[in-house]
Image (cartoon, rainbow, N blue to C red; front, side, top):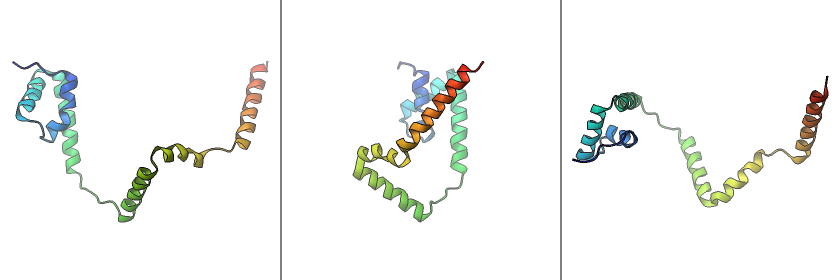
Length: 117
């Protein structure tokens, strides 16, 4: 007799079970666990009903311009790799000339609040 699946193993197989991609023996093990475990059975019911609802939603096609922009960015990231990601923050960084006075003002304000009677 094969070992029983754990709760974690059973839940990890929900995706394959919903897509009917499990081999027959593994699907039987999962269904056996679901028959004996109320907690996993509730989880499976919630998961399978969500999958069913998602399959009923009408599929939309992305506008050609959006698909083109996404693919351009993917190609650019592949080309530049992690170096590009590490430099990406430079576009959104505050200049030091602005940051230092703000920090000083916050420190002075905190000092005045703490020293007030």
